[in-house]
Image 1 (cartoon, helix red, strand yellow):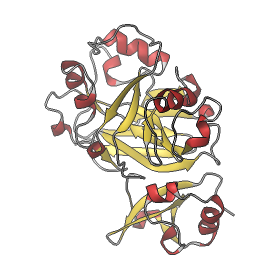
Image 2 (tube, rainbow, N blue to C red):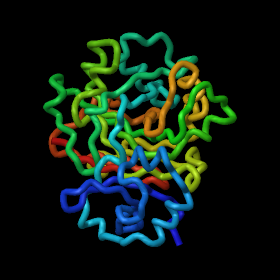
Image 3 (cartoon, rainbow, N blue to C red):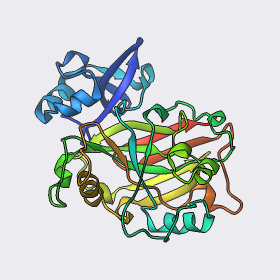
Length: 292
């Protein structure tokens, strides 16, 4: 019997990079199952029946023996969406950090990207020295993982191209974000895209909108929002993107953050060494990263 949520993960064991699934406090090791031992290739060739068989028959390893990595290594920039929750759009507008802002709630999705080199896994450190301005902030987000090539998809077929969901912390250097107008530099410092701990497949977690997203800093609840509160839902984001570009298996789209980020405080509350940020989403897990 497989777990309700097929939570796929990439992990390191004895200096080997492997792919498997999290089952409670154990890791299911797919390395002897015949499935691809690289997450994007596993996604590209996904066979649910083979995966379920591997889940049922593969050896279990205590999670304490492995090191979880980011669930995949993106081959392209991570696509992200700005001001995609009403409450965060209001707090962000009030902060004055967006020099290009024309309206509080956008009429169309606001897209930007983060460099693949910014990606780290669970328990890896967010390094503040990579932000020379000392204004590092957190943004807990649900991210979409593409499973099938998507070009000119419709609202009705968009979800057919989704493989699953993961968690991204869209860590941001706020003064860099404001200083350079375009957000890329402020969003892309090394270690500024924690991802994980797993990818929950869409077939086993179809109603992601009912899940809650919560972010804590040092166990203090900062963000709490339901995914259904997105301004632009996942089908809208995918149709908008696929009208102009090809989305490919393994592409990651972070869908936006809710109210409660550091710049929403007066004065702003930025991350400092010793902080621990945890982002949790029902059905996916908790992404935990220390700050150094």
